Image 1 (spheres, helix red, strand yellow):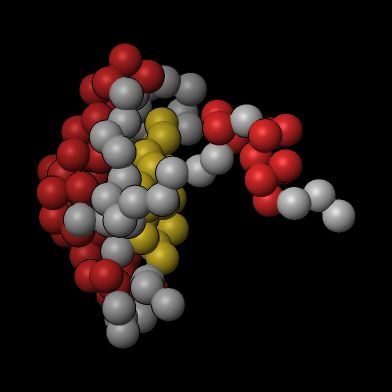
Image 2 (cartoon, one colour):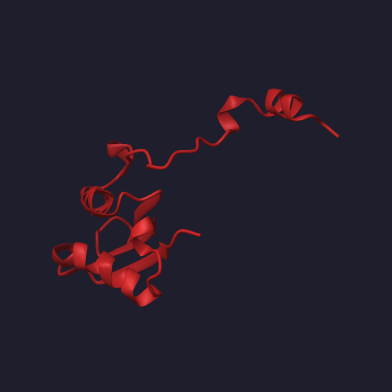
Length: 107
């Protein structure tokens, strides 16, 4: 059995995950304008512990996938969680064809 110290030395510090209660902002150069707008609105409203926004339409901005974890979802049904997200994105939703939402309530 390899000790934790030994495993860290073998794996190196780059493979360690950073734990934080607030997700780091996305690197602007890899997010499209649409992804960045959605990310910013959701981050401001929900203070998420996890947030990912991806344009899954090939870059044309017509379909987005969102994964978000927040204390704001505690005790709410999945439908109510999704309603909160879509309410924040009301303007953006008018200009797109599809939205996939995965909400994660706190344990």
